[in-house]
Figure 1 (cartoon, one colour):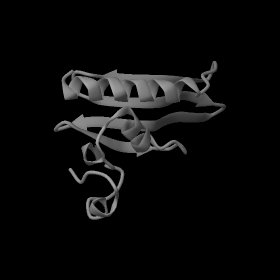
Figure 2 (tube, one colour):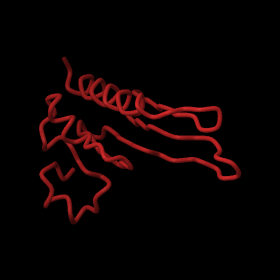
Figure 3 (cartoon, one colour):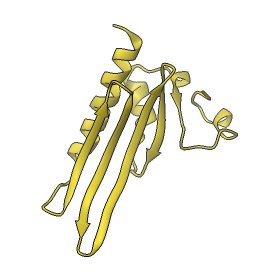
Length: 111
């Protein structure tokens, strides 16, 4: 199977699994945004808690130049290691949430 198609499946599966453990209610909705055409994938919480607006990107992953970029992670999950278990090589995972100067010191790709 084509690498890009496989990476899209991995990312969508991973975000779907993570978001399934999140809880939607009448006030805050769990949203999955899976844009396979532009390769942007997000798990969001959107709504209201009392008078407070909730608009939170819990996790954001992009695919750019056949690499998986983890742009945001507000969980205690480790999506990079989960992707490795699925078969993604470390060098194809970029921690976009880290500044570029730190990326060479991670165990993952740099871009």
